[in-house]
Image (cartoon, rainbow, N blue to C red):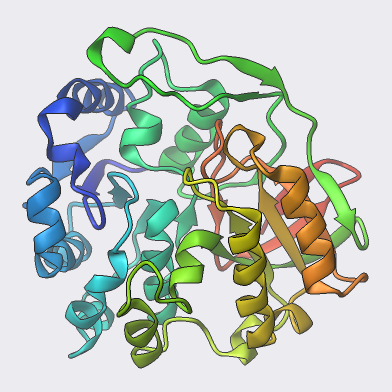
Length: 341
């Protein structure tokens, strides 16, 4: 049972801005109702400019959260775009390895970088939700599917299985105070889709947001990102990927098919597709470019026997489940479930 949640801003500092005050208030109230105490790490509410200009303070907050014996769970405030800049402050002198302790770490999007950092020091983490986008949902409650998995995680410390949501929601556009209490437009969800390969396969899941993974190899957005990721060996060696299941989902920036193609080619060049047991693809936000992505997955990967399962409710499309990294997962598309042991 999670008693205390530490909230960190490791990428964007949006949580500390005045425009988000009403969202933060909603989220803190919900966490209290869930029975959790909350600690805001020292710099978590310092705002966008401060957080952008002080990656060393973001790293300091993460280290402090791991070292605080009262904190059971570390929850990312939101994603962002430059979490890779924490690397020198976490790895130059073994800071993260020396500080890390067994706690729940939950985040998604640009927090993919943090998941890769924690994997590097041997800590299993949880992918799929964050404070502002999920706990602070402006409707009268959290989205039921999202809340179900969050409650399971904080009450048991694990996720037993995930199944498809019955519905998916269009992305919220208005986050102003006037939008509080307004529902999202919903649509019927079609469930897990087996794109190719066998319907049942197993392995430990690892991966994240393909936009962020792309930044590990391509310097178009941040010129220094590939160099830093290579210096600290952030992307695991091929041996580490053997037998795993690769998770990929796309951000709210709705990656163009051309860029998606390039991202898949970067991954293909690593050799990862030749050693993994399968791929899970998150539903894109508002299902944008979904059919184009599917066609590219088949064409670019070029391994017909490799299972690819699409339409997982994970990442930037609403609602969101939570996927544990580093534990054995059993995917069964015929039974429409992914179970964990």
